[in-house]
Image (cartoon, rainbow, N blue to C red; front, side):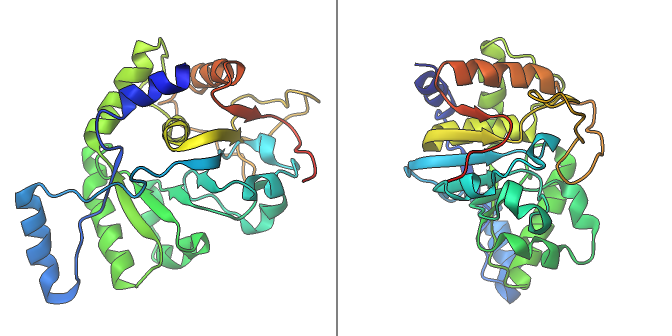
Length: 257
């Protein structure tokens, strides 16, 4: 069973750990140092929880005019990538969010706390251990959100989990380029914590698969992605998983609920 094979490999380590616990104020620096000295990592925010239905929502232009918002929001748990805008596109992408990932570049903005408040009390995945330059900014964001009493709950991927995940996909023959996309990581996580995974907005090509009309890069803009990823290779593997029944790829318009 490809799904169980994936789970048994990736669950060798805890997939996630919450950010360092702090009480704020005068105790913060003491807590931070103590946690570092002890190598402390709190439990995964998922623990042994298994959701029945999950939606992993990419940001591809294929979601524009898809009317998939209601379908996405009907999932028990919704995962979104890279802090996407929602309000103007709710008919196509929904608004429900259980987990959202963040690209460190957005945190250069002075009002980022206000901008990300649209995600309510969801989990915010920060890439603290993906690359060395991400660690400092991720910790600053973690503490800033605490200072502003944000309802978002930050957590970080266990670096051992990330290494195991890269090794697993390479062992399956997947060439994802310089690094995996956030989308592939979130699909991997969803397969571990959900019985039924529906994937939306994953289509790395310039034309729609049904009407062949040109598509924007994202449903909200036409900015090109970096060349660090091999999205077409990743997508081909997602199609394979779709055909094996591990997940369901939604391409095109969604049927009314």
